[in-house]
Figure 1 (cartoon, one colour):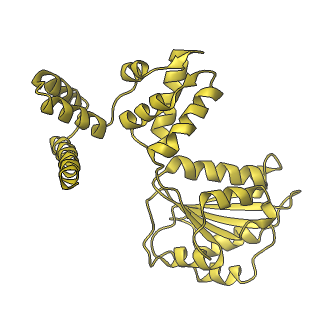
Figure 2: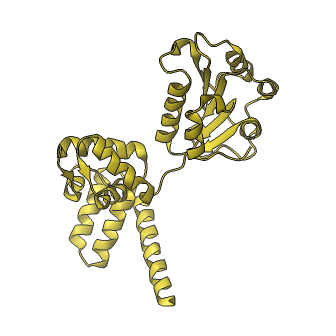
Figure 3: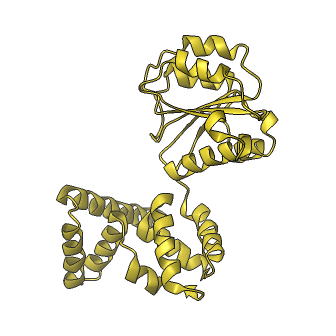
Length: 266
């Protein structure tokens, strides 16, 4: 089966009977992976005896036999059962699981998940899930994708945020949703019912290394050594490694050079 899209997966949650017998969820955006697991639990079990109908296993300790045993257990007063297996190691032996998936138990969904970017392409478990079920990678979203999400999040918390301020927050903090959620909590608590401004963001939110490196580059090119040194001092106080700071600066200058070269080339 081809790799799933996030939209297709969320659509399937609205019709639990259409869910596949096995999934592998992974990716660097751990916030979305955790949210998908929460939605699965709500769609399949909810408050219907979750202690009996949701089994959580550690992939590093549990073998395929234990996963199959959990999958073959009968649901209790509920048509569905969910088996969650965290962080299966590379090369996980999955022969018993492959045999089970030839005739899976009805109403049972087995979900393997990992917060790494991607398992190895030749990982046998990943290959099995691609053949017998579905795989879904949760990558970091872009600034364009995150902007409306942040504006909506502000509205749900009782305050307001413009698209410009949301984009500025992403450029300052980065694209990690866990970090953005933490900063939104602070900003909304501070702003109350008014609009969140870029000044609020500068006051409350620590900037990511990349964002600070961009500001340092701008200060250097505008011949403002005092501002550049102030930003560098802040990074060193945050215990950022000098080689990481140099790498971020070099990357920013390289991007500026590429933009200039493209502009001169027409």
